Image 1 (tube, rainbow, N blue to C red):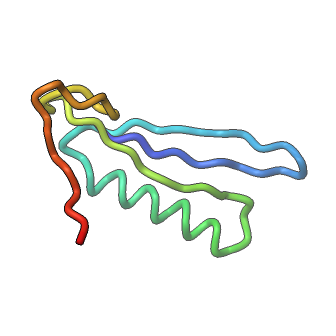
Image 2 (cartoon, rainbow, N blue to C red):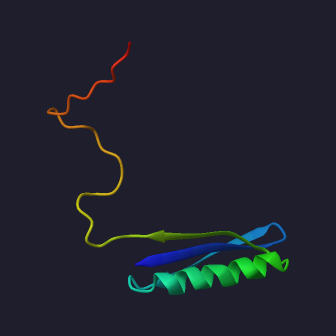
Length: 78
């Protein structure tokens, strides 16, 4: 799945928006982002345009975790 996020700024008020795209529709998500950027270039108050994805078949959990007790990597210094 892909999510496109953007913010509309009207004066001091900023309103966040999001739109979901199917996992097979990355090109649709990127085309939508380009339409938002085109609006931004014409002077509309569209900002913070970004895309995020989440792979439902990922191995392991997202994020940072502590290394296990069997992990013994050390940086060599000379």
